[in-house]
Image 1: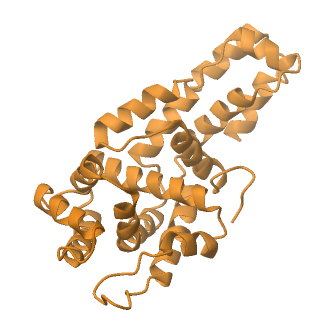
Image 2: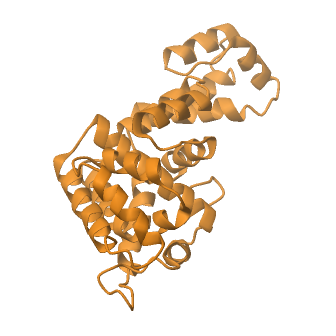
Image 3: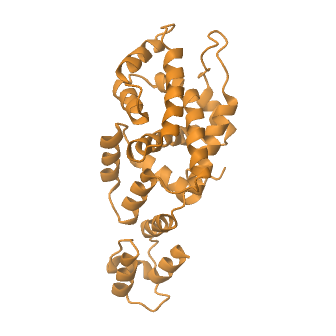
Length: 270
């Protein structure tokens, strides 16, 4: 209803002038100029304006159910397909894991990798701004299993993990990812982590759903920027400064798609 009302106002169905429409829309939390309203009424596509309206609608409804369903599906599938290594059985096998997960959830590999990155950002930002002790404890246990499994340097990649273990205080999710990304030297290290992350992410998103799928602070941050025509570079910079994970325009776009459509792209439904 909220979105339909705003769109109706934009297109002048209520008889408002562009100036009146812009004020009415602004009062509902979406920044639109009279000139833009006029352009839309004269046949411009107005994609960005519609995007702002849709984001404002999600903010007003406080509903992250579509995103939570998508992210939970990814995480739960990840838990289901984990297998121990054949040669080092106390480790989960990361070889081909992300590719297998992409196939299991019917997503292009590059989309899945970006989604996993955004899920890390949300988990980290949520831990910093609205911490939940049970989620934090669950994650710390999973991260501890990951670091302990790779303490013995059986390979070139393993040499990386003891430095994370030494630098992380073992206290917060945000702290773990800050250390991980500040010390990361190659992509292989992230690949070894993914099977261990799945259980913690599954716990987090299951908990969000059980609690009513309200928006997280991370959701609100991105939705607010988009609804008020904030620049992607500004919100990406803020996220990077807050949690130490580099956020790029594609990450913002894909997370908003998850919130709006329950898919990483409007053209992808899983």
